[in-house]
Image (cartoon, rainbow, N blue to C red; front, side):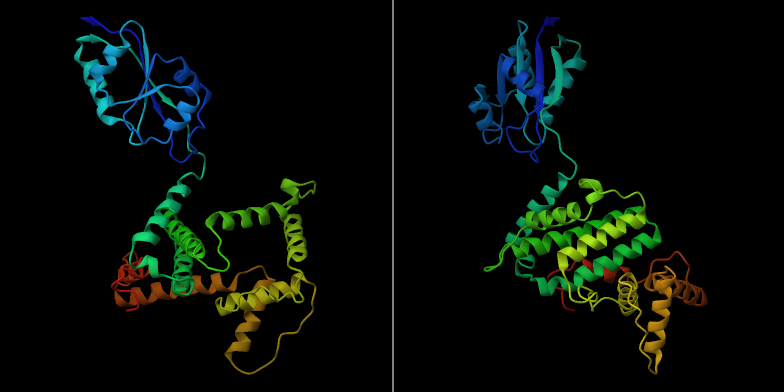
Length: 343
């Protein structure tokens, strides 16, 4: 049996972390290694390793090559490519299982880790590629995509109400896609461009400012005190002439009525509901009353409507759990094919 003492270190890095930002154990391994190799001459880490004085040989090695390089107690560090060198690790596994050789010490050393939210960088990159290369996506505008944002938001609400965790994860992704898509389009504006980083930066600044009890010296121990902080800082930011400013008028009518009632009540305004004939005024009174009782009229009506739908399906003899025939059409609209958009 041949003796191959020594050590092989497979160094892996994340492309979602800036090149050169490696862990201290990784730098120690690189600086003390007898031989450092990398099969990929375009690996983003190479310029930084060389700048730090690490001599990296760009060459593809086999498992047998590594064993020979380790002879005499030497340490070889392999800077792995993005896919992790599966052919090399498979070869090492075969040699270890053969029983014909004494294997060197094998170590997998992650040199950089993904931080929480790192996969968002993948989404930004994919969206950039799609915007550039897809004939349909490259022609889209904020105005043209607006309806999809509304549809995806409604489908997210449906997933929440259904309690379907898999569907919830998927619908959250679809809503996130809308945000990234609009931000990518905004980058191309000739007069007022902004990016996804600007979008994220804006909401981060807003959240920090509106949570002085978390990021500042203020104190809040109850949800009511948190809401008070939020409303006060929001009023300071917006400096609106009317409490009705900022309420989107295109939202569902019941939600609009409840929001108006909420703003008036929170501001301490005693405003009588307008009187008039017809169902609209009666619905307005019902929505305002529901809001005063802490009930979202839109959610309440949707729940009642779903119960009505189930009753209709039962009368038709349709199984309660059967998927509606329109699901496929709805999914096609949420993820449109260029040839079918507008049908």
